[in-house]
Length: 261
Image (cartoon, rainbow, N blue to C red):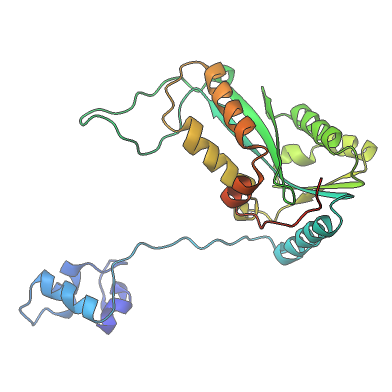
């Protein structure tokens, strides 16, 4: 069964993957066997029919350096949590049109799709999670413009008024590093924005928060008005924002022992 571990093109076939029929016709063409026999032979040889898996990788040439700097800031916040704050930040968009997921529904019918997804029926959520305390901050905004992001940064700064340094890890969205944001940061030196490596969303735990919210709120939702969707998302975020243990578990963060109070 060595052939099954190779590519059919090595045998002159215009195919990139093997099938039972192809193995039977090309490799076992002189042997009278059924497809079931080919399948059993493959299993005995330890060969299974599996889906390919996408490997996570980032093309960023500074990937290791960026990850090392982020880890350095995170550890510093763990050791000196009374002076340093470490946050992961990301955005999510809400709309009248529900996100789709499998669900129980009567046979022969599908969940209705509501809304048209126009600009008047969408909202942007700016969110951040404290990697030490597990506390979630969020801002639901009309748009994802730089002014809205600055408003969220002001909320972060007010929440952690006591911190000497607030490190925020985020992706490379242009809004995060626009001229207006850069000008604002010059006047608020306590906040440091650390960009993630490009195309590396698996490094941001906030991605898991949005998946959690979509599973609980936006998947196949029944609402027709954007305000109903906003209320559903707000209820969810208010419910989980202070649930430290559940946030750590759901977002894949490592629990950290913190000082009482």
